Image (cartoon, rainbow, N blue to C red; front, side, top):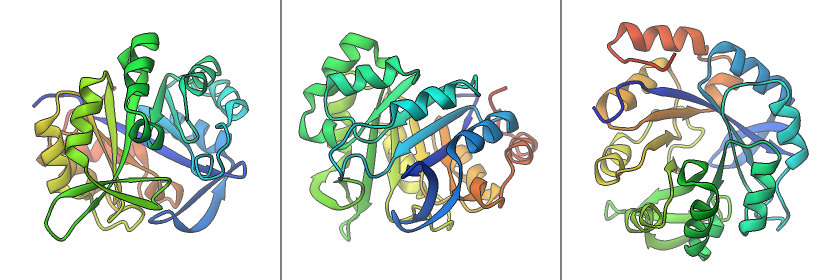
Length: 254
């Protein structure tokens, strides 16, 4: 396997200062305070936390640097942040606030040179392509931007390869067909992209049980599995999940 030690990433979608979760970015429910949730998941053994400002891009505003600072005060695990990243100044602000990595989505599509500029300035390890995709009837995957609102029609794998060539250090890939549905990860999607790309692929969208994590980490070359709903609603506990994965032959990060 490309990555013998697999990681578990806890996602925190934030709107109006609260953690929310829905299905396909809609029907959002309030699931708590982001700082409290971050401390809980870090304490439970999450290998990374991922803060997503889900309305910053739509509202054309900067992401929440004050929240980044407050989360970094209570956790020691790596923290990635995305949402509202429009240019190199936003990337710099988020990293200065304490983020270990920055996820760039819509802005990377509109200006692929931003990935190249950011990785050259801050290092590829701090720059993640945050890619939302949708499966078409033909079987191909297309790039979706603006928090799930706009399907560009462009081929997602071609775009991912371009961003990889431009210096992206990892790719957080979310299937909008499965996001929040708790029906399992899109295994063919992550298998395809992890086989085709050299950079780590983080699988996001669809976790509903420990078995779903096992499937995506066992059956694809994804480097990590990202989830939110199952942790927020107590369907899966991170310590039990890691134990389950270990018992089933998956080496998890310590």
